[in-house]
Each structure stands twice: as structure tokens, then as C-alpha cells.
Image (cartoon, rainbow, N blue to C red):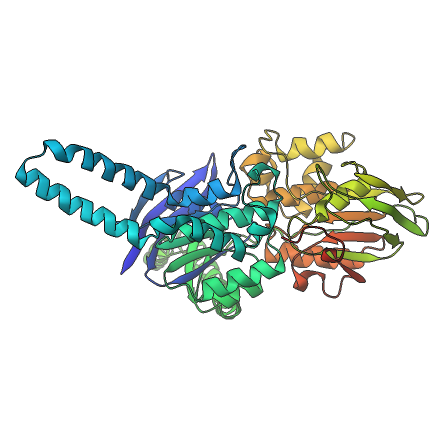
Amino acid sequence: MSILNVEHLSHGFGDRAIFQDVSFRLLKGEHIGLIGANGEGKSTFMNIITGKLMPDEGKVEWAKNVRVGYLDQHAVLEKGMTIRDVLKNAFAFLFEMEEHMNQICDKMGEAGEEEMAAMMDELGTIQDLLMAHDFYIIDSKVEEVGRALGLADIGLDKDVTELSGGQRTKVLLGKLLLEKPDILLLDEPTNYLDVQHIDWLKRYLQEYENAFILISHDIPFLNSVINLIYHMENQRLDRYVGDYDKFQEVYAVKKSQLEAAYKRQQQEIAELEDFVARNKARVATRNMAMSRQKKLDKMDIIELAREKPKPEFHFLEARTPGKYIFETKDLIIGYDEPLSRPLNLVMERGQKIVLVGANGIGKTTLLKSILGLTPALSGSVELGDYLSIGYFEQEMAPGNTTTCLQEIWTEFPAYTQYQVRSALAKCGLTTEHIESQVRVLSGGEQAKVRLCKLINRESNVLLLDEPTNHLDVDAKDELKRALKEYKGSILLICHEPEFYEGLATDVWDCKEWALKLS
């Protein structure tokens, strides 16, 4: 049974086309991986099918009474709401039903016999729905999901605006699972999740009976949960049966077949055009030339897909620093309350250290305390000599109205326009992206703009806070290569073992010193 039908969908932003005549069908029980390079329109597609965006052309049709659950990477949580409030919000439609039921009960005193029978029927239906969706055990369900996702350890009465990126993702995921939708739409759910909860989500999706569409650049995770791939490229959406590895095989064969057919056709076109040019002026051969011209005019021209610019990352290196990068003495990090025991950490020149551990235990806070951006509660950080530090933050400030050009120009005012464009192009951004406002770009494209700032400034120490979030496969591979090649020191927060294996000299598990294990 078809849950969702998308027909002849076209959409673009300004003069930049995202989709052109795209059709798509979702069947019951299908587990779909939606893949493609950064900026191909995966999140836009999700926003269109959920009704957040209106397409320029085309039709989106859902089956009747289908409840859709959408985990949005850009969802905003309001100040003043607790974790418990957000989780309970999953049952908002049930509270509305209950209210409607109470209104029916109030009217019963004045109802006639026929009206009374209809009301009783409606009450029975509502009652059944409330029972089916666990309405009378909401509190215990909220507690159960809170425990499974590690939210109970943080405290269900904590304000959601005080949470880390990973904790916020867990809250939204918990709300989604409590809603029990008929279809799940997940936009990069593993971003900001730690290893333990990625494993939990993996098991949940493997056992999930209904359909889901998953956007992810985490290939091992993707492979473990999906059975279909939809590949988004050059304004098209193509279907492949199997996992990502199978898709790569079939895609490589299709690509080589298309290239061979293109070469054959180009040769045929050249021969026909040559014949026409040589023979159209002669009376004896004019008819033959005209028939070949007709053949040319009717020919369905094969076009090769434009090659996407592959990112190239090369970090500029500053002079060699002193032996010690930093040393902490009885450092206690936190905000209103401590997140760590007293820390006595030392980082030496040449080390490439990865910080791992659950969300919310203070990894980002440690980076910011080392940089002096967040004051420590007590203790001290002593930085080494001759340090040139490059810092990559998790997210850009929201509401940024500057273009990519302006963003880089502000950072490097001495650059010419050619140098700015060239620097952004090397990070894998096209002319369309470069001239667009940063806020309309995808998460991966925004990350490339931030990386562009980082690689063009000399450094001998890099502090990187989850740099792989949102990045597509090519950009991740290139970033790993560039970091391995980098001769300076690195302190990296990362939840992807596949990324830091072969790169890290040391792995620090932060749960050894954390006071809160969420």
C-alpha cells in the first residue's frame, strides 16, 4: 500500500533549481536511505513532503489518516519548557481528543435520542484511540523513554534551552518515538548523538515495522538499518535496491555505461555534421545531407552530469610551538554547577587527541574553557608558547544574513574577489552557493564555509568540535586525509570511530572525569 505519492515535483531557490520533475512513492514497511552530496536538496525534500515548504510545481499526496513524525536537524526548542513538557507534547493530539470528549459529554444532557446514539458512537471511538495510544499511562511512558535515552540522568525537569546539542537531539527523538507515527522522517539523527545512543537508535530502527526515510552521511549506520536507497543528484531522484555498498556498485556501472554511450553518440554526431557540411551544397547529394540533418534534429542528446567540485582541504601551518600545548591544574569546568572533577590534563606538541563520551558531560565546555571562552569554575589553564589556535565550532550563529563571499571577506579583508571565490571553490562550493546567503545553505555547506575560514588561517593547534556533522562522504574523507597530513597538534571531539581511527594518537574518554553521565 502506498503511503506517500510525489508526482512531477519541481522546486528551486531563486535561479538555483533543486528538483526537476521528480517522482517518488513510499510503500508500507520500506526503510529508505535518502543520500546525496551536501546541497542536493535532501532536507528541502523533507520540508516539502511534510508541508513546511510549497513546491514550485508538482503534487504531494499522503494516504488518509497517516501520522507523520519528523526529526528536523534545525528544530527549535522554546525557553521555559522542561524535557518532560516536550516529551508530553507528543501526546498533544490525545489531550485535544480528551477535551473534545468532555465537550460531547457536556452536550449529552440536551441531546435527542438519535443525536445521543451518534454521540455515544463517537465517544466509543475516541475512547478506543486514547487507549491505543497509551493516554492513561502517559507519565510512565515518558519516564520509560527518558530512561532509554539517558534523559532521566539529566533530570526531566531541566529547561531544554540549557541542554547541549546532543541532549536536544535526544529530547526531540524521544518525543518522536512517543508519538508512535505511521512513518518516521529522520534528518541526520546521529549528529550530536554519542556512540551508546547511536547503537540504541540502530536497534530501534532495525526492529521498526512501519516505513521510514532516513537522511544520513554515517554510512555504517545507514547500511545497518535500510533496505532501499534513493539517490539525489543533479535535480533527479533515483531508486536503488539494497544498502549503500550495493548502490555504489550499481551507480559505478550506470555511470560508466552512460559515459560510453555519450562517447559513441558524440562520435556519431561529429560524423553526421561533417557529412552534412560537405554535401548540402551539391545537388546530387543534397537529399542525403538533408536526411542526415533530420536524423540529427530528432536525436535524443545524452548529457553527462556536471561533475561536482570535490573539496580540497590543506591546512596552513604556523611556526612550531613549544613542547607543551596546554596544561590544566585542578580545572573544574561547568556553568551553574560543576561538570567535572578537578582536571590535571597535559597536551604535548604533535599529539592528535580525540575526546569521546556521552552528550552533556562537558566535552565542548572543556574546549571553550581551554580557549578562555567559558570561564572555569575553579583551577587554571596554562597555554604553551607560540600557539596559533584554529577553532571549529559545532554550529554557526542562527539568522546569519551575509553571503558566503561576505563571510570570508570579513575574515580575510586583504583577499581579492578571485581569492575569496577560489578559497570557497576549493572547499567544494559552486558559484551558486558562493553567492547565496549562508542561512539558506544546507548544514554541510555551512560547515564547508566554516572549514574555509579555518584552513586559510595559519595554525599549529586545531580544536575541532564535531567537524564531521552534516558533511557528505567525499568531504569527510578529504577532511580525514588533511588532518592526517597536518603536522600540528589536534584536539578533536568526535562520535565516529571510523573517522578518527588511524588519525588519533590518543583517545580520552571523558566519562572518567565527568560528574554527570547522561
